[in-house]
Amino acid sequence: MPQADIIETVKDPVCNMDVDPAATPHHHDHGGATYHFCGQGCLTKFSGDPDHYLSGAHRRAAENAPADAEYTCPMHPEIVQVELGSCPICGMALEPMMVTAEAAPNYELIDFTRRFWVGVVFALPLLIMAMGEMLPGLSFHGILPGASFGWTQLVLAAPVVLWCGWPFFQRGWASILTLNPNMFTLIAIGTGAAFLYSSVAVIAPDIFPARFRDAAGRVEIYFEAAGVIIVLVLLGQMLELRARERTGGALRALLDLAPKTAWRVRDDGSDEEITLDQVIAGDRLRVRPGDAVPVDGEVLEGHSVLDESMVTGESIPVEKSAGDTVIGGTLNGTGGFIMRAERVGAETMLSQIVQLVAQAQRSRAPIQRLADLVAAYFVPIVVAVAIGAFIVWAIWGPPPSMAFAIVAAVSVLIIACPCALGLATPISIMVATGRGAQAGVLVRDAEALETLAKVDLLIVDKTGTLTEGRPKLTSVMPRDEIPEEML
Image 1 (cartoon, rainbow, N blue to C red):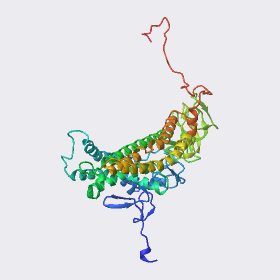
Image 2: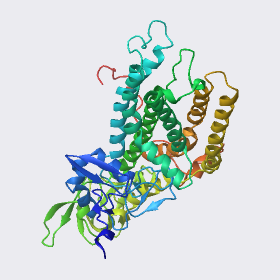
Image 3: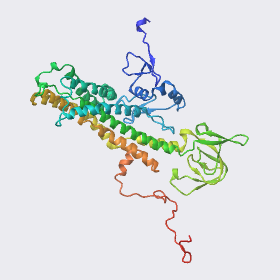
Image 4: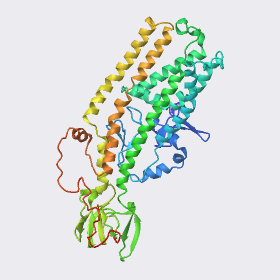
């Protein structure tokens, strides 16, 4: 093969895939070196904590992950991949489908938080400079005469749009390539148009005819619109990511019902303390009084009573003796016993409950399918309306008509952005099912939540399902011959 035909590739430091440095648009400089990535998802994770990935800690964690680990998009649960990356529809970083007890750092949240605060630092002066023109005595044209006013805004806006908002442009471009227009499409087009127009107005103002100029002969610039919108969208993304993280914490709290360690009985009868991930099916485990049962299994020796309310909702303790089954995460009473481990790891009932809740979070309510259908037509219609607004203002608008036309088009794109349409239902389902699981209410799918809103009669099968199911001291009444002070 000729030397010119040989493509030299490098390894993506996150997913370890081979990447052509000349072909990929995803790069990051760190420690004097440039690293190349297969997609935006890997780039976002790396930029959140480069040292974590360069040290290889993520690969060691991946080696301990289940062999059938899969990743999905929280916005598009139909997207399932066997490797980390980004969603081909919206560009959002994929998340593991399996919930684990160990909370991994949310590198996307770390990255977006950093971008948000950098954006605030630069966008706030932009906003003050732009709004100062509308307040008497605060005009910055006197402080920054001539072209320096526009160049100052360009310097302030460039890092906000080109760095802080870069993930939105990548997601918007990905949505166009995959023919899946979404809110990032509108954000990218709107802010990109405002920034590009304003940059040209500052760098080459002489190319603009009179239709672009105001009464003072200046070409209007809109850097503050692009910068402030980017910062506000970053804030919304941060709130969404934090809501998702809190929901994941609620599921991990369920997994925390199982103990971190277990007492394994050796062949000589002695005990050794091991971590829960070291327990294998067939191990003989000792459960001491007051301890939580580590895994699902069968009682071999001993007798005790267990609190199984976290599974059954029944607060009355259940007696257990040889031959009875026990469930991991349930609380042992005053007796001790030896059990044989039968289901461990993801096979335990507790893990299956958590995965059931996680699956319910990713399910779609009927109203969400309607919202998706509306959004699919909504974005192209908004783009068409923005183009129409531009044409109308450019032809029939007052002078400077072209400047007003650009403002009208950008306003339509940004204001009509369907953020709530796409996020409200998925985030509501995630938060509701997570909080419900913490309260002991398990929801099989999102459709059940929507159906529950129409329920006007609820029949409960036993005491303790809705109440605490255990006696509680409410008052003390002494006998007549015993004064209350004596008690």
